[in-house]
Image (cartoon, rainbow, N blue to C red; front, side, top):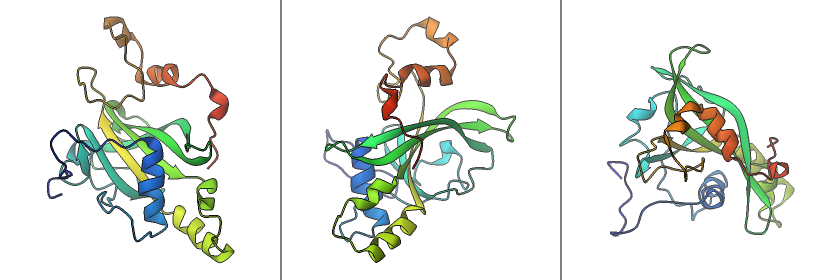
Length: 204
């Protein structure tokens, strides 16, 4: 992990689903589970610009993973992470909402006049229903869990690059052509959202 990489056998790479990130990593961390897979580091998001994450965050291809404190200062030396007002519900295999994924983009300069870059962050948060994963937990235990949930978020950062086969597709780029450059990045996000908008819950 000295270089931010996971030592996996040839042919394998770290590529968890949204549900796995929430249940197996974020939930395990905030619940102080003894089985917590301690491979994703904690970072102060304001210390590093996104292009400086290599060797600091857990890297897999062009993706960087790290835990950070919720509501931590999102301003770095070169710019700031800007929320774009979108959130998706993370639903488990048993149709239970366990988390929320928010989208941010990195702007260079001072807010609100920054220049948008190609760096994107997906920020994963536990929702209140996630605290009920263990139904036999006492009320006192639930209170501690709720307090713990408010402290941590799991972030996945990557640079959008249409030429890269390893890009994380929160947008569906199956039919790429030169005309797509006429769309702004925010337009692409809206066009790629699921049609079933009633499943999107902005409350967490």
